[in-house]
Length: 469
Image (cartoon, rainbow, N blue to C red; front, side):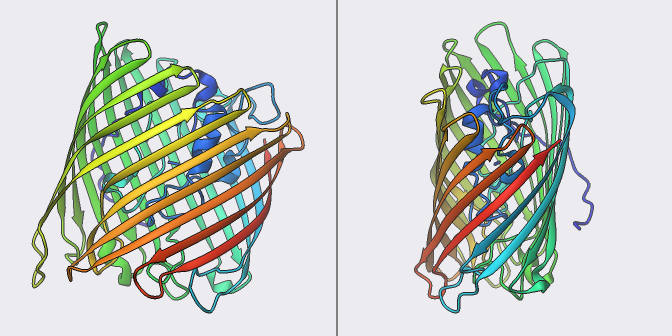
């Protein structure tokens, strides 16, 4: 487990003000604060596919087996009961034709996964008020900005935990347990002011791949994201949000200690309410990455951007922002490389409730991120994810998730390594009743790299069930 680090107050600037206005039937999880609920939220968290489990490929991950039915309208079998404490037990069996994601010598495997979970909320709710999603290579620990947590009362508290027990048929030495904890405390001392504390702890391992985790080096890590922030909503058209965040990452084995780091930063944003449906904002962020071992360069990241939140209806929202990112790197002994980098960055998040039964989510982002390769000091990441969710009947629903990522590694040698990854996952979910759910899925995961040996094609199929209490 990760050595305890003195957590300093941190902030997570929660950008999607438009999404914060969404109705309570739309408040949940991949990825700072909360994602909208309902059909759209199910799509969002499913879009943060469980393909990586690490964030190393810049794809955020959410435990999908517990949350499949947590985000739909009440009155349907897909949904949790209203209460203070919610528990679930999930199990899945999946087969893959390429366990280690290699180009040659593929190893098939049956994975058995059992996942007990529990979450507590005050006041009582039928939906999760938030879900934090971390990403190891994103500066500050998060690839995508997180929308606000709706405040319906003076005080809100939330605590959730999940443990995943995983057993492999190919090699019992791979058997292990992963887990995560989420926590949130929100308080309104006076009506215009909202204060918030957030925390996400994760014990996991990187995705298998020759350049990442292997059978001999599983890259087990612990990470913790902590944030504290404040928002002031004035009676006129202006509002302000500001705060600080801390992200700590530590790998178990010394061979991976070049990635151990702590990020600290703050951000501030001013909002202008153009109308009930639209607000514009300007945001500044400063985040510093400090590595434990001086094998990688410490760096300062400055972001200056403008954006818009638009909500055409209670179930159709869009957030878009763009601006300038400046990165300054410290010197490394006996290593010469470009000590500064700058680029245009952008991010967009949209949810479209096409019909009462169908929703579509689209997220995209481009920015300079931290490296997960000892040969590179950074990487430029373009990430795109699309999720479509449809309820066929009261008991049967399906979704399709697609993720594309391009990672261009800026190597110390001056050469560029470029990886393209595509991930596609269709899934069906059937509610036997209000507490028992079945699901079946398949996925196709492929990477194309200009470096020999990093390409792979992997197919996975699985069956699962989950009981909620």
